[in-house]
Image (cartoon, rainbow, N blue to C red):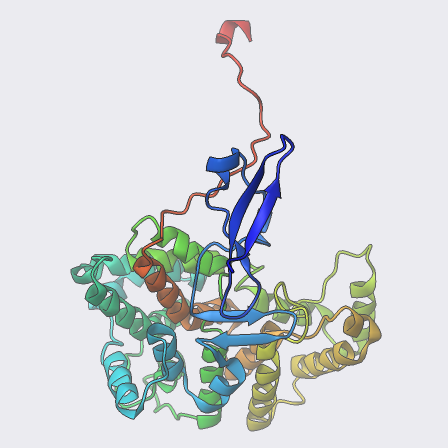
Length: 429
């Protein structure tokens, strides 16, 4: 029997709306006909109780601490797959077999170079520009260089654009970093893995050969996996909203990057490091923890708790393991900030206040520490996030374009401004 939800109105009318079941997770009341039937809208700032789309890509159960990509638990993917396998999964719905993986990897690796004129575009930015500002501009400009496959209604064109974005994003990010520090660009090499290639483009210099460290490559690859997609978050919703107008994929991804730049979203791990710098020393941890508990003090511990996860962030446990692997590999356990972070982590996991409120360390807390250990400056953290999330954005965008029910996004509003009034001539105002 089909489930229905009944709305009772003050005028005595009752209206029925279908209830749509998901594969897992809560049912959804389909209110698309609400305005036509009743002449009213729903009011839901922040979309806390509103599904903006139907999707088969990512599922989150915030209460249980579950994150699934295409049905696969994030823990298993992080342990048994590399980032490009996860990219294939998000784009095509299934994990690749050996041949599919080899073909996919070869296609991506052989498209990592960018047009040389695009490389010269960087020179139009000031050297001290934030790398995310550069990213927004350069990624948006891709449509001017790769306009041979911009028909969004052509599945082959969408596939070509997807390959280009996944392949070229590491090169674009690395060039943003090199430009900001005044070093020459390092071009990609086809004999390295996706993540090793990115690290070489970030850190190699012409004066010496770059040595690939497998432990560090694995750590960054895991960061990419854990950030690849996260359901209908702010930046993903931005990509979908931009895409709903028919905008080209490069413009949509640039819009997602701009949204991700916000400190409440992609800038959270950067804020975590800034908080550690503010605390300064292990001896100060207790003082700042007490400040965080004081409801009259505006200070907040960044990197603890999560908007969606009301229990443990499943990515945080994996990131914690990676964090300690990197610190051991580099011998950094005695580093001031890392000692401080570990002390703060211990208190947060044991203190009754944090445990009772379920304010556990989230993925941003650990990923910032790992990236700092890898030598990535805080100004680049959100760029790394954008690199990882690009494949999720593309998968979500492609799913939306392929959905026969998709329409241009047009949220409604509760208007509380002035009622109709007449313009008075300027001499009489």
